[in-house]
Image (tube, rainbow, N blue to C red; front, side, top):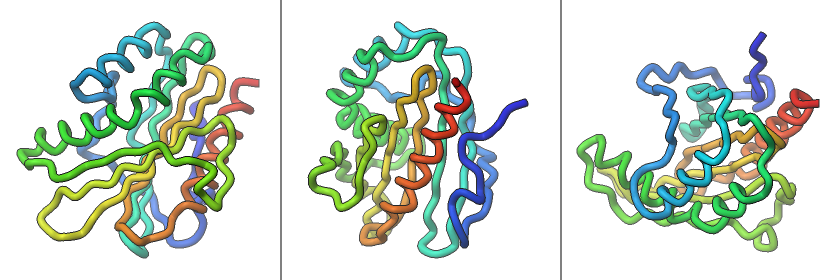
Length: 191
């Protein structure tokens, strides 16, 4: 029986399940470019044994969207995959976001990704989570969209939570609580 690492009840009030009708599972989640190629090469050194992508939830207030992608591999990460992610992740996310816009025939605007420094945050980031933030100025309105992109590294399981929201909306506590829940369930699943 397949058990989800994140459930609707984990998110609190105001959230609902969302069907991702246009979302297909991608074996390769990255766009093109040098950083993506470096990550792709490291990822291919591991044997992918499972993939679940497309679970999503929407919050009524603020139009917040949360998507989870879970991958499992034959063996735990020896540290190399995560090290390459920490080094090239920001550039890879920028390349991937631009490519996804171009796939929709939209010229991407200014896009910047950065690894959030736990020392700068008021929220504690567990050692098994990498937290990138992508700021995207693409769109028909002047609204700036932020994406909180958290990767949970748990043995053989690699889970990515991506939360989209408008600039100025504080969702840090919600996305971190969800990431912690995913990490706890992933660890229990492998025990």
